[in-house]
Every structure is written in structure tokens, then in C-alpha cells.
Image (cartoon, rainbow over all chains, first blue to last red; front, side, top):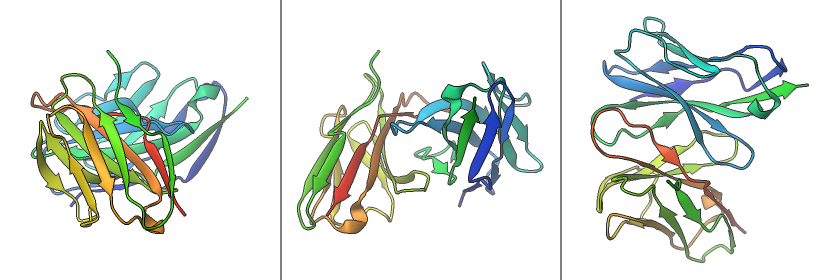
Length: 115
Length: 115
């Protein structure tokens, strides 16, 4: 079974600073994908970034980058130059390539950006 | 290209009543997922459709829950004899179903409150 652990219930960051949200995962499978989603107070889950287990380079999408350390089973999200609109819940998730590719989520981290 | 839509956005019902939610996936997306999210938790997988076939169901999906996707387009999730423990956000997601790694795109969710 897959498991995602997010150990930071809440993070507070000053606007324009960079922030790292932690995520560790556990699986015995070799082929898996790691995802980060943002959930504002409106409730919709917004896809941010994806990393495959065989990708050698860390994924980047605009201000988002994924710090993938396979040996440590970690997939931390880095947000550069934080903005007030980044305040939201952030969820790390993983799936296996076979079958349904259903997502297994962590408990989330609430990020608050202070002006 | 419109995103995933869900109706209703909010539902308040009395214990013991039946409720039905609808999800319209992104056009031409073959895969459709239902998740449930309780307060303070990450979403949990409920069930998965590939076209009209329901291929996987979670143990969370008790016999009071039924999901359909009759023509491989929209899907409905029905809860019979609702209980207070069914109060949650019900999220629908879709992905292309073309093979390989796929990102799931979520709808805005339906918030259910059972009194």
C-alpha cells in the first residue's frame, strides 16, 4: 500500500520569500508518480506539478519546483517568490502507473502568506 | 475547454434521506474518479470508471453508495439512507485515459451536510 506523509500542518511565510513544503512517501513499487495539488478555500483541487519515479531531473512549473530525492523517498514542493494568492491548503499525492492510477493523498499543509 | 463540473455545489439533507450528485468530466476524458474529503483530511479514493465500466471501488464505498456512468460521459453518485458520517466534500476528477502517466483534473466538489 502507498502512504503519503506531510508533517507540517501549517506554514507561515512572508510575501516574496521562498517556501518548502515537505512530503515523504512510502511504496514498494518502482514505478509511481508524485503530484502536488493546491486547494483554496473554495474547495477545488488545482494541479500544480508532477514527477515520475524514473525522471532524473526535478520537475519545474513556473514558480513551482519539486525537489525529488528518491533514496530518501521525499518529494518536497518549493514555491519561489511567494504571493498572497498562494495562501491555501497544499496536498502531496502519489499513484501507481498500473490499474486505476488512483491518487493517495497526504493530510495537507496549510500555507499562509503574510504581507 | 471547460473543466470538470459538479452539481449541486452544496447539499443539506436530513439523516435517512437519499441524495444524488452529478459530475460532468472534461470532454473526451475516458477516466472518471470520485473521492471523498472529510474536514482536515486529504481526499480519499471512492471509485473509478474507464468509460462506462466501473473498474474499482474502495472499501469506503458501502452498499449505501452507488455510482454510475451510463454512457461514458457524466457520472452520478447516489447515497441512500444518509448518515451524519456521510457529511463531507465529494470530489470528482477526470483524466484522458490515453495511457501512460496522467494528471487528474478535479471539479469544485459537492459539500454534503447531513443533519
